[in-house]
Image (cartoon, rainbow, N blue to C red; front, side):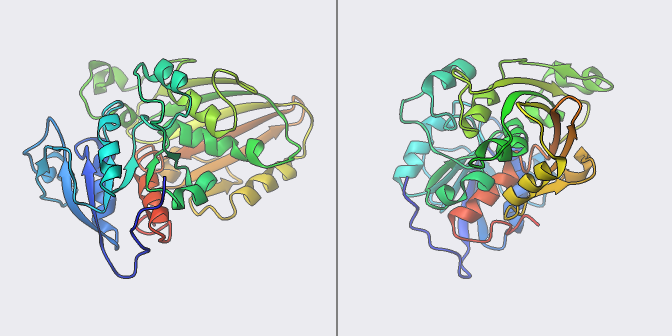
Length: 345
């Protein structure tokens, strides 16, 4: 899609709306946009919570705007959608036609393969319902040319960034045979809707795997790495787990290589690949969830066992920021020609 008519910021404030502001990701968008120097928050939309003041739902965020019911139109320069999967499909086309800059946080427009979308999301969508996949570290130039983008998923962000240098650097010598990944997410990743199995008494001192080998982020990960879930070019196993903490994703990947490598060469590959990525930090020491909580950073640590030829890559992100709202604001900055770190550091 073509770039919007909005020019790079020169002291102007762009108006922004959040459709789906009552959920956790929507609330983080509100918090970030309120402090963004080039944005004026114009409207907040919700469905079941319409009519309430935002501060009634999130007292820690100083915003007394009333949540409105979305009626199909917006006058804002920028529209963020933080809705359950399936709902943005009906809203985004109209926003694009009206000239809005659109950033969708759901999975509705991420997958190019329609059959994979219908298999993993269990919903149909038009054959042309795909937008720019907006992972800044991989597709910055394409994002900058786009009017509407699809924000990556939270698990996908932590895993793709952990693997991208191995797959996307042309002619690198690290040939991957298999990848086995276990990712632990905080409970906020399941959304704000009340569910018995996510209550404190159920999750305290507990962990639970779910959607094993069939999570909807699997085809998204494969697609970004130049493969597909239906015809994979490498063996990939993904086990998502819910852990007893509020926010964060901790991904642990075991990568089997087809030949021996030097540890220093792997480190150099990653540091070179992310040299111009302000929110990816390749750490020599082990990363932890608390190192990235409440930030837009992705931290990556790499270990290599020469005796078995396997890499262990550990990545950590805040699922509500780098995995959702923070990355969405980062994408907005790129789309509008601004410094991608604006409002995020």
